[in-house]
Length: 496
Image: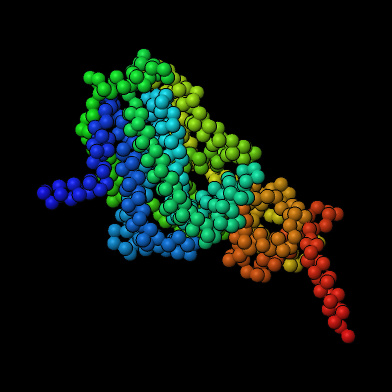
């Protein structure tokens, strides 16, 4: 004990941390806030620390490349001692963290803790929620199985619809126009460095604000927030008979609840195991029903059930409105009653959101992926597109049918809506551009270079070149024609 004391004194003489730590532990809080309703923030922080520790252990084995990511997860699951358990802790920790942060946000909203002077605390909390969801999404992508591949494709498709910035966002996320090796590297950097770094920074600001402004008092009916008098009233509350030090009055409940959360995560990990990975990612397997992790199922159902004409407006405008409402809430309702007993609209809002999320999550088990990917597999190519075609073009039409291009692209107003209609694709793209699009993909179209032989690609492109309105010539590369012409002249000039 004497050695420990001497080491502590040695460190404190150099770090000077004992005094601020003691002040933090002793900072006064209202007696009624030493309640079980106030334990969710510390529990979220505890689970985040668990995510960091397990994430570091996983990063020692995980290989963020398209060819090795899936294999490295299989290695963790089956060949490395306790690797599956660490993956399970990380996966279940992610779910628990999202749940705890959401509950914490609801508690803060119902307790009116976003009102003056805690507007910035609320805004930082909203950013923390976004970062937590970002961690969950990027973590699912790193599994790089069939669900992750198509989930990423849907995410890229949503990003591509942003006006002006869409192509730039897709390139930023994917590292190019298609999902490839650089895609995983970027998501690995986001999941391991960028988002955790932002989370740590926001948590530090959040804790600083909590210490500076104090823990929100228990909402009492009739205790109204007024900017002119609130700070004085709060000081009297915490420094009078109703004030108690944070340690030990409240901290033991935080520790107990956080410990229960850790035990619950460990129990889920031990009994239910890790998440995936599922089948290896294969862009040509479209007879699949990829589903996101639990907390994104409601969004999956919304996208599945929306009419195609409403997808883009809802995807682009809906999240922006929700974010603006959350960020603007403390400025619109910064004063007034805090108690939920006198704020029926707040209670009704929470109930409606909970019912909507629960309903859509339930519907996700029955909702088809939008659009239905095998809805047009049996539809033949309209005869007018084959009339007068050559043998090579007919072979290309067969490739088009066998590879089920019809499920994403419409011909004669029949077919999938995931990609553009191809009735006049030959007018939009030259032969070289068609070959590149088929082989490398682009936007939300997967690359088929590894799944088509050169002969199949040639035939398919030959068929696509016939798809143009009558009387309108297909697109051609003018520079290529000039180059061929120049080359021909040059060759002619060399001829004796």
